[in-house]
Image (cartoon, rainbow, N blue to C red; front, side, top):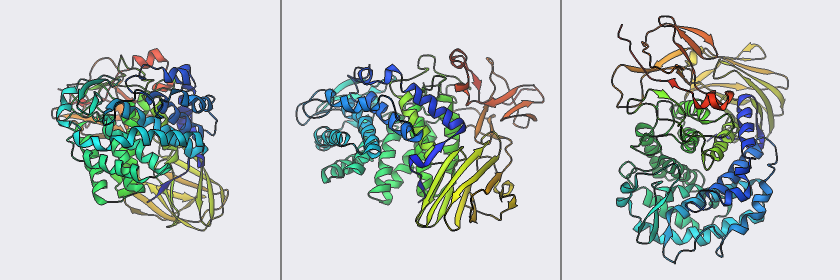
Amino acid sequence: MPVPLSLGDAVPAGDLRRRAALNFSRLQDNAFRYEAMIHASTAQEAPGDWVGRGLLGLSLLGQTLLTEPAYLEEIIARLPEALNARGYIGVIHPAGTADENQVGGHNNLLRGLCEYYLWKHDQRALAMIRSIVTNLMVPTRELFDAYPDDKLAKLADGRPIGLTVKNEGVWRGLSTDIGVVFFTLDGLTHAYRVDPTPVLRDLIETMIARYAKLDVRKIGAQTHSTLSTLRGIFRWWDEVDARPELLALVRERYALYRTYAETEHFANYNWFGRPEWTEACGVVDSFLLAGQLWRATGEAAYLQAAHRIYFNALCYAQRPNGGFGCDLCVGTQGRLQLAPHPKIFEAPWCCSMRGAEGLARAAQGNLMVDAKAGAVWVPFYFEGVYTLRFPDGNIELRCASEYPYAGRVRWTVVSSTVAAKRWHFFVPPGVLSGDITLSQSERAVATLEAGGFLVADLALKAGEVLALDFPLEISVMQPATADLPAGHHRFFHGPLVLGAERPDLVSLQANDIFIPLGRGRYQCRRSGTVLAPVDDLTYRGEAEARAHRAQLVFAESAD
């Protein structure tokens, strides 16, 4: 499989860098310093969650932006103060019992510690990883046979912050973030990469087997917990145990999510069957999972989904202050307009930190290599400077891109010490492979199409420019939501869903003629309605962003 670049080898520029820097700045604010995170509003219900997410976001963006986070060392140095006598955060429950939110809260603490350790190789982080795994996580292995999935649907009244609401035998508390104990597979498989042990492997295998028996729709699982669980199972398949049934499970559950819990702008309903608000944490997981499944299967549809999730759902969820929040769900209950959720404009306790991972991984996955095959893969077209490493040398490229607003991408070869490589350029959503042209220093390059990519063998020299050009035009797609009546449709510009920013609802015909205005904007010749991308809240003031409304789904007009 193609492998993403190391974080330090993928330095973003342009809009992606601006978004990452904006989020990095937000994570320096008081709410994300040690004292505030340890004593935050979520500290009792989900101990370790806020500080873990902060640690994760700062570690990833520090590497992406090549900048040391100002308060990261203090978090690591003082974190042992928050640990109990057994080396984790919160109450020590009697042996043979566990609290779901406490266990789930340590998922992001494990992930943050693991990412920090892989960056800094700090033994203090490794010691905390070991104590959490050994003393909190491993003892739960014998409890999963008694996990009361038949009782979970009764808890389907959760709020933006998960609550511990019910005792069930050995599970002293169950969470309204239904299924949250299983999303700990994300942190546990990450910990296994850092410190593999037989007992941890047994726990992971036990949890995967138990999770495979859950009916996530029937229990009303929280979609963020569902998607994080699937990413943990994917990591296990990718790095430890490539059993076909594990990949099949991830694919089946992800397809279930996209069919029954995805909005018309590619975000998530935060629970199966509860289209009340989206959650940027779940959007990040969906974006990452789509890219991972493309790597595993080679199916271009996953990568097309990743483009649409990033540019619409994730970009819309970022706020002018750099944080991330929740939005209203478009496509069910007659809702045709997208808007920020008025009560959860920003979710600093989770989404503002987890959004960092989406941005960092976008940069990291912009180019990938298969060193053994001598191949380069270009799944995205983000601006930046990228270093590709092969056994016979390295390539350093600087990318300038107008995508997704225009189909113009340029790579300048800063240096190259390698022989010819086979390059794969992704055909973006809404583009036909026959319409793409590739040139090398203004000379046309012959290409072939395979698996949704243009393929060419290229030997590069310093100073050369690779140019990729393709048309991006308005297109029409049917809604994804099954309960919308017939005669509704969405408009796109490449991967960008287009909206009419106005307080009232308008009708547009699928065959209306639209005049291009530039940067993905169009005006309907018949009605004068303007359609535009919905990815620009970070370019607005907070009051304007809070008031934003854009109709994304349109019915045919009566006339």
